Image 1 (cartoon, rainbow, N blue to C red):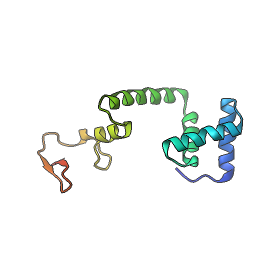
Image 2 (cartoon, rainbow, N blue to C red):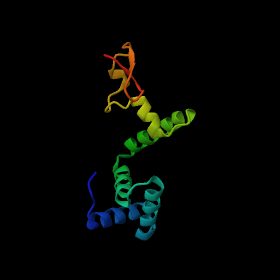
Image 3 (cartoon, one colour):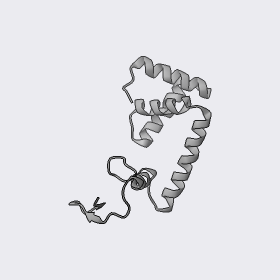
Image 4 (cartoon, rainbow, N blue to C red):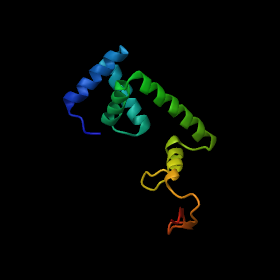
Length: 118
């Protein structure tokens, strides 16, 4: 994502407020509260919300359904969705665990983590 200039911020706030039928002030407060809750900047929260609402409705629906499944599964293990997804995908630069040879022996790394020796 890129940094937003003041004109872009104003445009996104006006568009978001119009779509929701609220004042720009109320929408700005909603985005700011969300940013604080999540621990990101106001601009980042505004970008994410705007991008989400620009998605075709079918894509939004699929994304929300997938997120609900991830939340449910993560909750089973007492994990956040972020930690659950990191474990599922591995923390090896984004590769999928399915990409590795599951029959390879595991060896400990210097940090004590187990890795497949290929």
